[in-house]
Length: 498
Image (tube, rainbow, N blue to C red; front, side, top):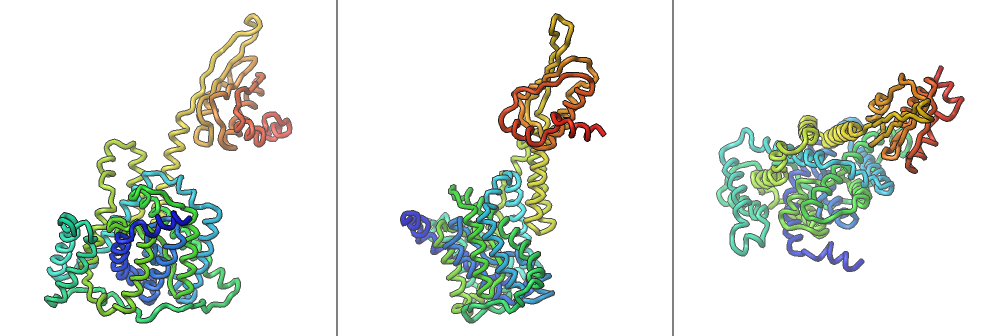
């Protein structure tokens, strides 16, 4: 236990401290922007980001991943805030946390194994595009100074690491923010800065219990929103955890992360913050800046609060161009460029799943919908592929001196809803034979559709006067056929005949 704590908290102190500072700076404009999207005061998003980041550092299942207020969650809050106000949003945030904790205990995190690599790649590429698109308003209708500062910021980010000694010691995004802020203040360049995004809070968050009636009516109001927030939050967090796993070559506890997200959201709701989840952009900034442990997430949350409350006058001077450069770096680093080359060598179905996931996410700006469509398509392609790999071979044998004929059908492959039609079409019911043997030694029946199809085959042969024998069933197939099959139940057979 102690060794694990040392590994997760103190194995990379310097890298985690510096990376946490970079992430905290990048969190400020995002939290303010997401608050504006949700229709609440900027402090709601900032307090949420502080609470969620600090709490998830202790209880989350993925060290080094950043969680805070996010745009995907903010979009789901708009109607609730407009219709019922902030207090109901805080109540919905608390319920969201409870639902996520329940999801963790029932091991919803294990469902991530059903998300194919093509869906994850599509999710990553779509998010990279959305991150880049989110920077375009800061680059539209502005003076040339903004473009020059952004270009200079990108130059610092990509070239600074090549400097000897210091290049690898200090995260280049942090250098970018400090240098561009100094240049702006020194030369008095009039460009948009963090202070223009909205007012920063000047006090620490305090305990707040939502002032809503504790009755069934309130529950019915907030429940639909809480379910949506819980699902989107967990989905985005699980996908981000998977990506950070790949970036760091380490594993994470998805079910613990589900519970951790729930606890963090309850904490945020009680401190006047809105619901949040993992942030892929900030998580990648953290990893690429050298952050690996829980300390980086903790520092990001604490430093965020210190900056906005005690250093607000300085933070307001940070030019948005510097943060735009950082986010463009994140966008470029997030996009899976190899996936473009893989389009030539990957199967068509894999490419369709990836491209469709990207298109749906970018079109709807809803990560949950895009991932759902991608998983659905991947499932359909998989079922179709497996269904086509089932075949039925047959041979005719003369018995009793040639006076009787016996047909053996050998089934090979997986029989389920997608292959059931192919299964039934493989039998010749009009052939006059005395006995039919259905050999299932190399087959497996998966669902009640497959069992129902087997019933039809047996009953049809019996109607034609043939004796039917089923052999070679494995234990799993025997169990499902015995439970749901009716071909040996006369009363049920009569019902099917009607």
